[in-house]
Length: 396
Image 1 (tube, rainbow, N blue to C red):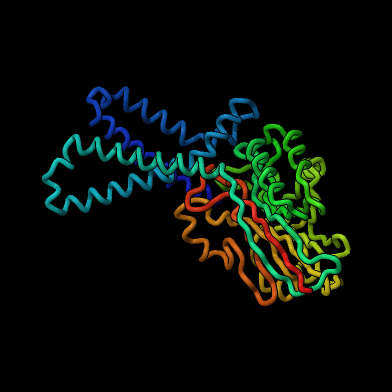
Image 2: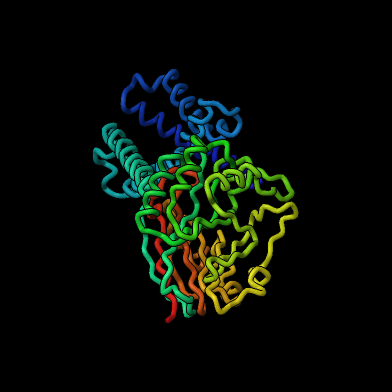
């Protein structure tokens, strides 16, 4: 429904950009200002603009996969091209009300230069964003939990989230992630949801990707919970088409996790090595149950021996106070992507109590990662793809 409300605005934005493109090409060369050129530019641009819809509607094929991968970049291209164009329009409006209006800035050459600047600025940001999204960083934290663990002074945990495996994120990105994880010699890997990008169909080499996950060398293994995108739903430009009801988690996703050696905790708890608890929460928005229900953190931790450390895996970093009140020691989360692309990176502090990093909530730590993969545009501007190496010290 939200997408349908925004659709007229999307069409108008693309039409506006097309008009400015045609105006720039007309000034670049009179031969490019004719009807044939105008029609060609309009058709090419709108084919690109409709690539997300084409990716949704085309039956699975090599061509459809190529279209889907292009569409993963398109929204970022549109965002930064529109932003650069609007900045140029604002500067032009300001200069029109100054003495600069009588200079060469408003000549044909000035129009060509302004258009070139828009292309260079938008293109530069897009190329940087696409490159940066592929560079996985390692962020290190050190925390102290005020509980004793017999025979264990510390625990080396790695937090990952938001791989969004599918048409955009595939084998090469996961191979890089696994290499980064093994480099920090983890005792345990905690996977805070959004393993998939709404489907398993987009996985390029599923068996090879599963084999890569099995190469993770961690004493206590890989433990995960599902996120809001670990549901088999049709998705278009970030909007899912769910016409009512609750979608259960896809059996194909669970099968993949079993092959990959990923242990799922869906509203479940487990005692690891008789030393600490892991509690995996279902997602609040898309719990993956037939009736849309999920357990509270209080229900999940009731009956646990709270003298032992209790670590919660929750895809979204919300209900932090409730989690702290339940006697949990660390809440591991993802989901936010730390905004992923500017200007969304500016508003994450408004939306989330802990958009990324570590905060203390009473006696509990909230640890949030910006994630390994991407959602929507395959770009990261103003934030990084990361794994989090978390050294957890225990009280002697």
